[in-house]
Length: 264
Image 1 (cartoon, one colour):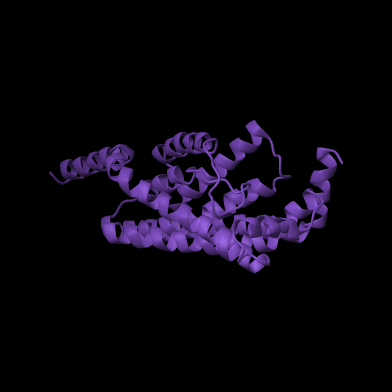
Image 2 (cartoon, rainbow, N blue to C red; image 1 turned 135 degrees about the horizontal axis):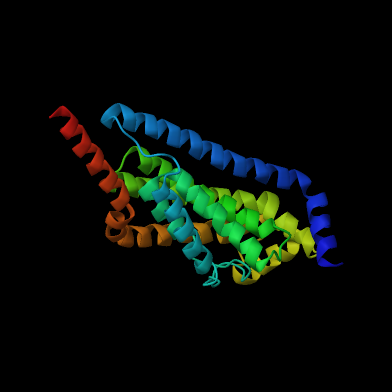
């Protein structure tokens, strides 16, 4: 079976799952859109001004951080407690940093552009299964974290937002593997899901079925990913924040100066 036939077979036999994932992608964008609208209304009430959802500053950050995130996808490695086809990388960190600086819409756009670049430049070796899953799992981490921080910008809020994002990525990642990713890969490779479970059992004898595979391999993998990404973000965000917000602060100063001159 050639690559095109494999892709068509994967889509045909898993169309319900693909449809569900497309709906999840739309839900991620809608959630961030309405969260941004609500946050901008809050800013207008409190300060009388707000930044456009896609200002020049935000578009520039999306472009730069998407490219960085794409490059980080190449630096991947397996972890000892999960089968080797699960690769750990740091590509969600730019989206989290960008989202903290500019809001959840920027975060989800970085995730989307990163995956799009990967498909356009590298192509797909998984019939778009891995790429779509990468976006959904990444969004499950950065969207809740950046929405929480968007409304309450403090160190405690940042810590809480990363904790929520880590829990979300663990849950969504496990469910995604159980109901879509592993069944879809089973179709692509012409094997049953049991083949993947056996790979998990070889690493951890406690893995005996799909549930224990996701609970003991997938969930810990994503928990660790969320924790590591959160720690690194905490270490670098404080240093990057003044640079990322420079244009916004400059624009704010100009507005304040203009208002003061008008009052004078």
